[in-house]
Length: 114
Image (cartoon, rainbow, N blue to C red; front, top):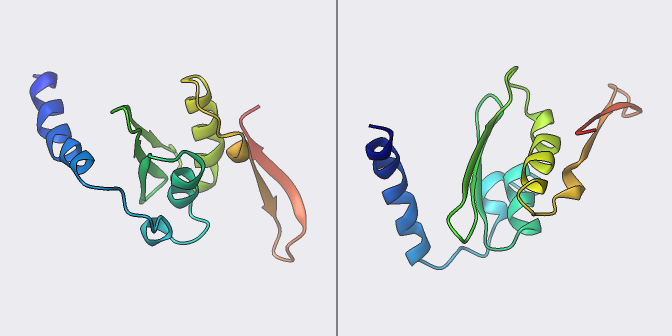
């Protein structure tokens, strides 16, 4: 059953590989968005963030990943992505830590992947 559901989901996604990747990554999630920066740091990847801390991405060789932050806050996505893809051999060390700032813009901590 899962094979059929996977096929139904992936078949349209695989057709994306038949077309050249757009060169305007910032049109996906805005300049500085996690999905935009992921595509800039890992050339050939496609990525799209969603609501409530969701991120889906696919590599040029067909690897697909989806991450969901349980509390819905997207600030943990970058460290989680860095930790996850590093185990797959990709370098997203730029995502390893997200600074936390107070209302005055002062650093008060960080979210990191230890």
